[in-house]
Image 1 (cartoon, one colour):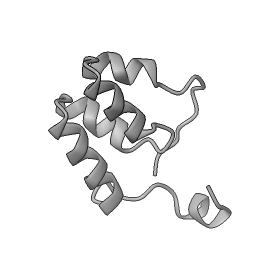
Image 2 (tube, rainbow, N blue to C red; image 1 turned 60 degrees about the vertical axis):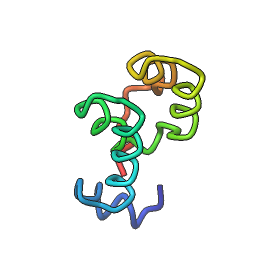
Image 3 (cartoon, rainbow, N blue to C red; image 1 turned 120 degrees about the horizontal axis):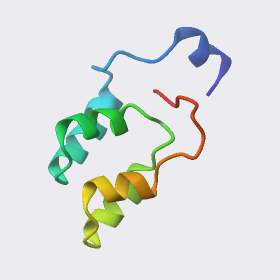
Image 4 (cartoon, rainbow, N blue to C red; image 1 turned 180 degrees about the vertical axis):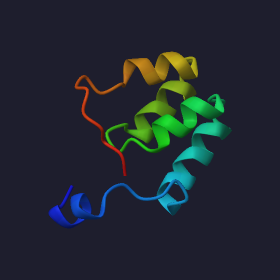
Length: 76
């Protein structure tokens, strides 16, 4: 994240990227709350999560497998 992005803070939930990510997760079968959480975290590799789903992994388990190890926020 650039210094300018940090200074501006995270975008509003209506940010186009966050909306797109949330939509993709909802289409893949994620619960709305989990989709919202994952869509706002830039550390979550959306393509990797969706790849696990395509291979038959449950959404909650895919999110857990690919969850960032640190406790820092990675919000867009």
